[in-house]
Amino acid sequence: MVRQLYEDTADSYAQMMDSEIDLPVYSDMLSRLAERVASVPGPIIDTSCGSGHMLSVYHERWDPERALVGIDLSPRMVTITKTRLVPVPRSSLVTCVSCLMFHQKPRPRC
Image (cartoon, rainbow, N blue to C red; front, side, top):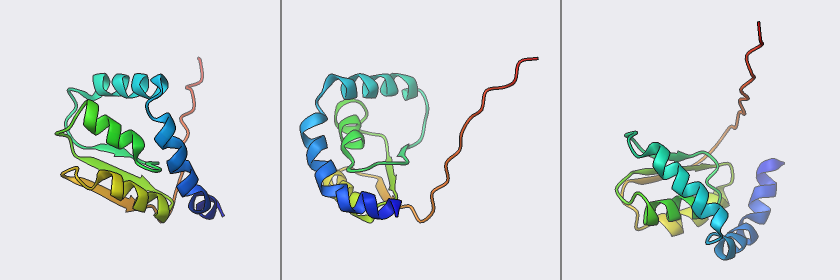
């Protein structure tokens, strides 16, 4: 049911992100990410990569040498992301078969 919802809206979501990815909110967030992971080795893993806009912009503007991994529940989203990340060396894209959500609970105060 959820997968089908993302499948049905993948193309319109990608079009929306085409027009919104240059908004300051995305640049600010990706800039902060780049600062925080600059000294951490290994690939960037986006577990809800959607249309791949965030991975693509991160790669182009902040970290062109780092390997990227995109995972999404929707095969259509993964296909869209593949077209965006084709020129990125060492990029991998995966359709998620099962999705579990983990929540961090605050520690109780003693």
